[in-house]
Image (cartoon, rainbow, N blue to C red; front, top):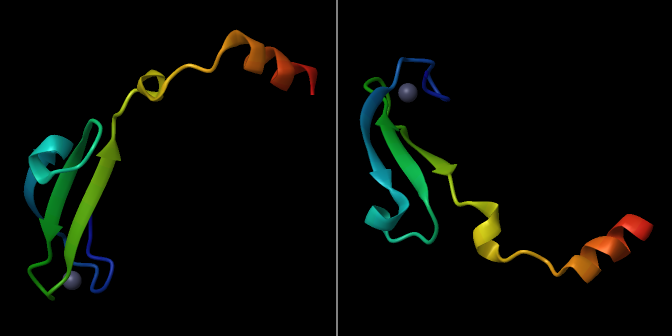
Length: 67
Ligand SMILES: [Zn+2]
């Protein structure tokens, strides 16, 4: 992955779980830095299962299908 600003190959800084950085849900935060300029990049990969937000009742699914 190259720097957005100067197109230099970024240096991988490390991976952290969402809970390690105080975020809700499950996921990975990867941080990278550029050796050429002062750019700092964080990549957020959200791996939170959708079902954890709560499944809608079957009645609501039927209403959406009828529309
Ligand atoms: Zn750069």
